[in-house]
Amino acid sequence: MNKSNKIAHLFAQRSDFDRSSAIWGNVTSLAILATLAGCYSNPLSVDEQINHLIHSGSKSVGGDTLSPKPPARDIANETSKTQDEKQPSSVNLPAALLTYSPADEKRDVTERLRRYALAEGLTIENAEHAAEALLAPNPQITTLGIRDAFRTAQASGREYRNAEDDFVISAIRLLIERHLWGPRLFNDTTLGIVGNGVGGRFDHTLDVVNKLKATQQLPYGGSLEAAWIVRATDQLRESATQGYNSSSSLALSGNIPLLRGAGLVAQEDLIQAERNLIYAARDFERFRRDFLVSIASDYFGLLQDRALIANQLRQIWSLQELERSTDAKVKAGRVEEFELGIASNRVQSARSSLLSLIDRYIFAIERFKIRLGLPLDQAIAISDEMIDLPDPEVDQTRAAELALQYRLDLQNRRDALDDYRRGVANARNGLLPDLNLAGTVTMPTASGDATGGLAIQPDEVNYAASATLSLPLDRRIERLNLRTAMINLERQSRDYAVARDNVVAQVRDSLRAVDTARLQLRLAEEQVKINRRRLVGLELQKDTIDAQTRVDAENDLLVSENDRDRSITSLRNAVLNYLLASDQLRVTNDGDFQPLPGMPGAASTPAPAAPEEPKP
Image (tube, rainbow, N blue to C red; front, side, top):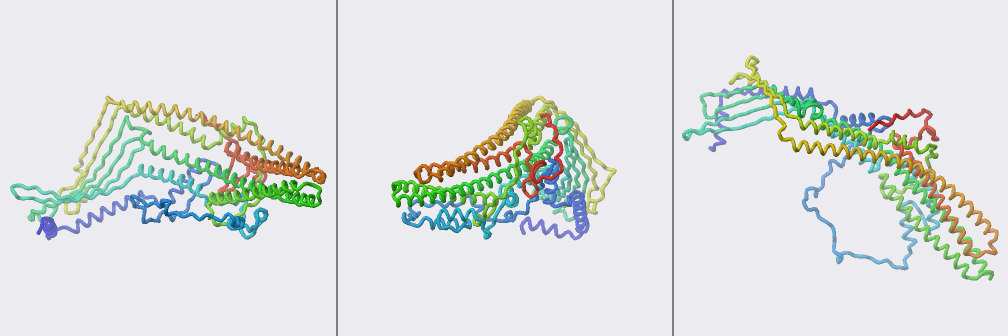
């Protein structure tokens, strides 16, 4: 029989081994552990705690901020066969193994384009038919208005989901930090065997120690620990004892700093985590507003592309009429044949431009579907629905005041100054001497108690107390840390001043952009009127003018129409960018644009007065 089997055999042979006492002690230990855990455990689930923190963080920002509740991600349970590979394989074939099939230059390119367009729900035979099908309503495919785009982007947009995750992670970090500041339970069981040899004779001792403890950090530094220690010892070789020795003790200990590490510096991580949740709530709300402006800009760009296609199609129809009339003149011998070539060449050039516009529009639609989180193979169309965005009537001084009051990102920077000031104070605390108080109180039980170690003897209390003073003879690193904290504070103060000035400059520029876009739109509309009157005049003189003059007029009208549509898009974007720059833009909980009082469709309730900008 080997030594391990012999030890187990000797231990099992204890005829009067008091198993009932051991079981009673273990059951009692588990009962106390369950009681402590039940008193401390939060009845809410982890997800409910996270949602509660997110809601409180959003509520603290004020206004109609959204409290997201992201759905459970099924992807968290997905596994991959290659996820543990240290060297994942790559697919990168040499050129000799690749193939390329050159196309026949005489192929029907229109047929290829027709198949591409079918993916977007368009049935075409040529460029003109493609444009007509694109501009006409199609009940067979999904049509999105701008408000539908807003809601879809918030419901399924990947960028939006990432922003939600950032907010959730901030709440999780705060939960972790709060947990560290609550009572924490631990249970350690140690099984050891010791052999002492004297003159070739070995005495074996089996020692079982179970330590159930609860720790608590103190709000102004230090910690407390309460532990129940149960110990059972058995001399395996001494069969005369026919039993084991057991004892238990209840120990209370603590360590409290009085100088360095004392005060609110002990809560630095918790304070920062609490503040970071507010910062995350502001960042998330700011993202929602910026995301709406970005989606609206893409939507306006699609409408602009549709308008350019409509303008190009109109020009093709007009040039085709010119081509037909010029052909009739050539056949009648009234003009030279090169005049027909000018008209026909311009028609073909216009068709080529139209195909390029359609291709750009299809690509823009696909990118828009990616941003909305829609499948690429889902055909969608864009409606002409629009939100009312009147020009703001405000001067630059007032616009800057509003931006300084409302900008959430600037508020984060302003509050970050307090974080750096707190960092300087904490660094100064590190220069203080160490003066720590420590104490321990232990209530033991009688050695060899057969009741499982439950008979506490309060009349035999042991205690110990100490005070330790450590003079700051070497604080060079702490002084350097203090200097670093002061430099960081000064730099953060400069960065805040730069950010504040940038906000003022940005909102002023956005306001100027509104005025510039409005003026450009007026000029473009006037140019369209002039060029249309010019064409009407040329139409009255069509028998006396040449084809080049008419083509030049058509080109000028097309350019002015395109400039007008670009100016319309620029004005819409400029108004939204002003609302974003001044942080007056508001987004509903479902992701829609919320009109402000004074805008068409806004609620009649007046907005509350803005608070003054806090001093940094």
